[in-house]
Length: 258
Image 1 (tube, helix red, strand yellow):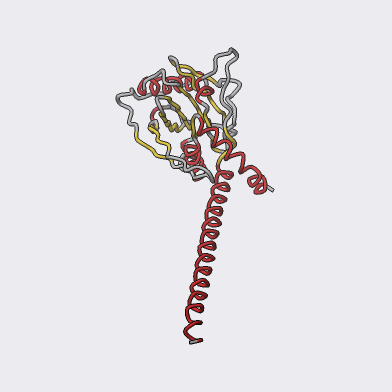
Image 2: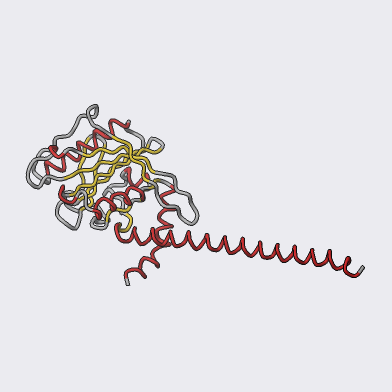
């Protein structure tokens, strides 16, 4: 009788012990998962710090009218060798209703160009005006014509850039129309390599152009910097969240530089 009374109690105790062990195991699994996710995030921070600079400062106008890039609220990080503000000299080029701003590189032959539109232009119009503004840069600054393809002849392809997740957001992919100008577009031994990317969201348009020397176009620092830069683009309220997420990484990034 005593044995029969203890058996249910022993069984209940064993079951409780198993439940506690299982619960502890689940807690350890969740903790390990969080640690793995955090390690992956730190790897992302390190790579971004290696290849990217701080977020770009959007252009302003002397008058009260804000440029489309300011109105759109754009978050974008450029490759490390690119400045964060538009150039003071030869920093703006225009075609139609589109202004293309030049962010100068620290080395000869490197520039980033940025243009925006708040839905006033159709896709083809925006692309055409961006390329013509780039042509103005080539003629005014580089003193040579730029052979630009007509819109109907331009071979735009689709590029999808997947930003890394943050602690609070699953960030959707950023889709671009991509166009690389052929080598023959610019004459001379120091001809440039131009990679043009166009992103459209809710009717709004943003164009990013990376100018690099052809000899460096396939270097890892250049290609990875451009890839990560394209991943960083955000507009509107997502741009605000991306800025907050970036600012949260600064203490860790500063520690890396020590």
